[in-house]
Length: 89
Image (cartoon, rainbow, N blue to C red):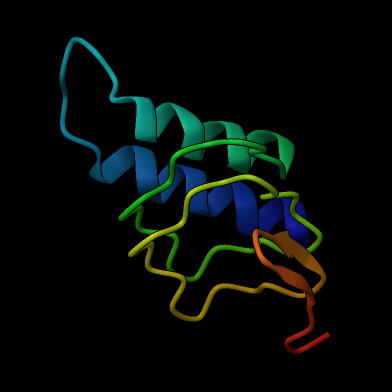
């Protein structure tokens, strides 16, 4: 189930991404998060993470200032400066 959600999210994100010759560091880091469920030390400042399944993700030392986590599954996600977060677990 999680794989299907992540795969469909990746297709959606990639489909909405503008066609450019170079990807931004943020988009590379979001891709890393989606592929590995971890992005330790990433800069996801202002990233759109809406509706993503971040359950059990490791985001320690990640900058999430102004990141949009609306309706994202954060069950047991390791996020900077707060303990493992439990929501809809």
